[in-house]
Length: 268
Image: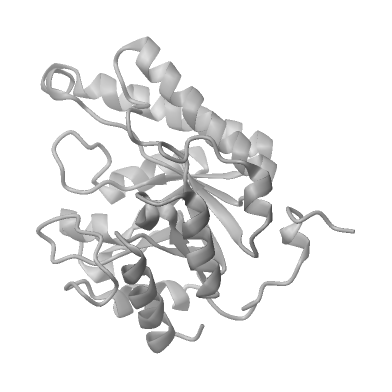
């Protein structure tokens, strides 16, 4: 009998269609079990587990009781893999390796990682060193994930001061050089100012989907902002994108609205 975690050997429910998931971020104020039940009841295939407080300690046995597949968003609260302080940086890398270990245990195929932050003095005097440490950490985490058979992806950041790798071209260049993959956050890219036709890169293997009006990283339900989502997603579909579209919004209602948007506009 196959283990519940041997999902790679089982057929997808929508094997000819898009892979859709929802982030547990929408239920951050609720027990994780409530979010898993909500997503399962919508017949969405994947949940992206935000592996940090209040879900820092996730029991794989709990996950196994749901008819869901999983990806993992490694911690980004109180974590900075580009920190100049050695103890802070190394502890952050360790926390993300814990997420990769969990992914290996539950056969989650993708882990999302934020590339780090440049704090006030760091970005004023030592920005090159911040990027150097970030690049070293990204390489280390990619190799660690490869050893586990887990896809480690690095996410592009929104237009907030101190967040590095807002520049998708620069992030893509690094990842191509390391033979690694990107998570495209569509809302972040729009917040930075990328047009719909400038968001495709071959390194993108995972997508966060949410909407905004370009003035904030609002994580609105799909269709409630000004992003040309159909154009972006159609580009990826024409390119035979085989990754997962994760709906990353603020609340349960926005998950449901976003999933209805996807069903209405695409073959799911």
